[in-house]
Length: 289
Ligand SMILES: NC(=O)c1ccc[n+]([C@@H]2O[C@H](COP(=O)([O-])OP(=O)(O)OC[C@H]3O[C@@H](n4cnc5c(N)ncnc54)[C@H](O)[C@@H]3O)[C@@H](O)[C@H]2O)c1
Image 1 (cartoon, rainbow, N blue to C red):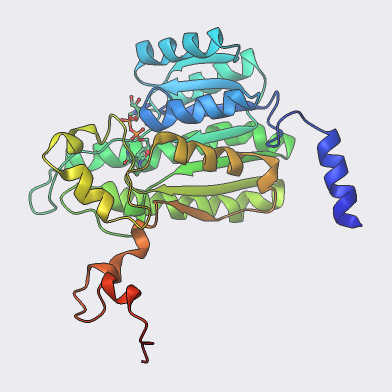
Image 2 (tube, rainbow, N blue to C red; image 1 turned 120 degrees about the vertical axis):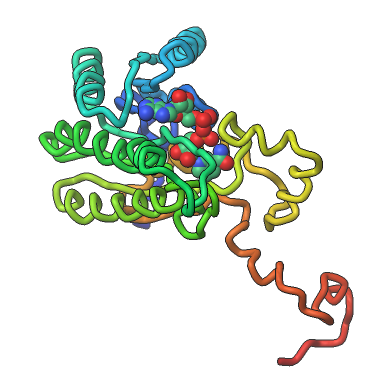
């Protein structure tokens, strides 16, 4: 009975099941592969978008494209590692729309570099964007959310938060930091009406990773390492981000969702185990341990 009432209320409510119509959603790194998919999915659900990126031209082009399809979107040049730039973006959003309802921290960079030889500048440059930038945007957009006692933060980390991604400078330490930052924000701000959650993508085809797929049969070998046997697309991440941003995830706080086609579940599959190969599945003899 309770369930029935709940369904009826929901059906009579917003047009889109995510109930994001009119919500002010800020997306950092919006001009990139995953960021633009997130913007598109949130926009299609009726959100009013603020697109932040340090690549102003690409950001404006995306806003124009979204506007053409009837989505309200504002492009703002912003370097998320610079507090004045982030404050400027907050002002831009608030004067156009009012305080943000949702912040998606997504901007990021990846550069090669082993620990043995990495310079302090290169180390700091990555952390400045991939970790400090996430804190600065959370803090500065969070002020308005805290004042109103409502808001959702979604942080795009990586499976590299759980597994060392070698020879990639501060990438893994930074992503692990994001996962913990998110939990800290949930614990500090949860009692004040703010949710903070993390999405950990696996291998997704975007400009950030495009160079990998130019090499030989990398795509086939990478796909074989996932349970779903494919490389992820930006929309695979965008749909999960939109769910976490929405009221449908109202009781999800301090959580991490891994979106990797089962990559993280494949470790034991990499271990040679004679007699336990895939062909065993076709055999009828029961396996006893
Ligand atoms: N592509 C993957 O396989 C993958 C896997 C795991 C996690 N991720 C994460 O997903 C997020 C998006 O990655 P992507 O693959 O779409 O990359 P991308 O390179 O396509 O997009 C990243 C965007 O961030 C912007 N950006 C970089 N530094 C910035 C700064 N200081 N201020 C503002 N904007 C800045 C770039 O201009 C770019 O538009 C990143 O955090 C990345 O670490 C990606």
